[in-house]
Length: 466
Image 1 (cartoon, one colour):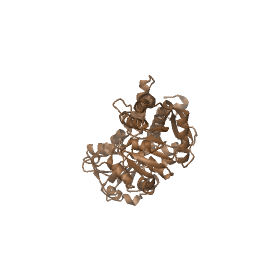
Image 2 (spheres, rainbow, N blue to C red):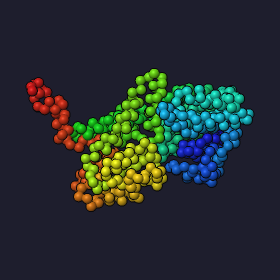
Image 3 (cartoon, rainbow, N blue to C red):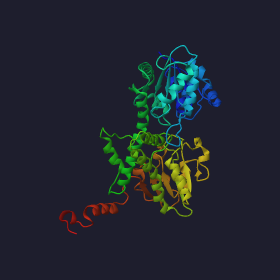
Image 4 (cartoon, one colour):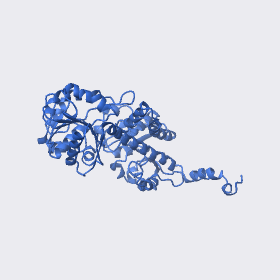
């Protein structure tokens, strides 16, 4: 039975996994190349910012320690989880250079170990990455054979930044790609002692698991893009409302409601690159990849369309306020953030832009300088702005009232991409409320549909008269 776990890589996912394992009673050794991260963990502090991480490490510091030595970690544990960067390369594939280096160090340590040890890669890779590229490194450096002397699994996590610990301990399922039954069974048994919700495991070959991982994220990006596609159509029909449509669609068990909310497109460090990587893999395998490339293209068009719609409203000396800069609430990550893209584009179009995000103090400051001003409160952002964009559905913004938008301008335009203030603002006299995915002009929209079916004349559909 596994009692001791090592985690190679103490970034957001690795540090969160280490803390979660410790919270479930396991002794954990963390490995990182960053000396400061090692020191922080050994002091009982989080090496990175993530919801609940500092508290969890502090509460379980007697079970967690960190080192720079792969050998120390492997020899002192029963199983090693490898969570290192696999950045996208110029082709859209995932680079294995960091994983290869870690596997080389792990292989050397395995050569000095007499007992069986399970190695689990958690970083996202494409099919063939584990068996064809990384397994030979372990066998060469250790002088041992997979299956006989050590186990090898691929087990990526399905987590979201800002909720990693909760997602890890309460997954929908655990994905296990296994070299053989022994290592897969061992990992499944470990997960049964770790997860809090009794989630099942899906066990399969290494290659099937590698494909499953990127397929999950790519499917979600397609679902998000479809919802935004519907939202745009809802704006062009009388009484159109994407939430009403999505709620009904979500009742169908084949579809489900999750990720079917029209709004700004997806962003962050995983969804865009995983969708792109699936397209790369399809091309390399001789499979039509248009679904992936079209999803990516449509997603990138959302923010551009927003800017074009706002452009006629932008004039000299106007100030536009942007509420939310990260790619999603509860995150300080700006990577592929559509809100950030919009803020920068509006600034370049000539508007003065002020922005507020609850996580702004944690964001990379170099990405926030030059294009716009970041203020310290939602109130200050609204006070200065004649046009206000609600770019993320943060709960702090959902609590705003109509009175919060009385800022001295005769009429304030609020563009709500997530419709979180629809009931509060749409009938306010001093506010022009624009909800993304809501029909804005029933007269024009009715006329458009009338012309579609009658050519403009009420008798044509029945009589064919023109």
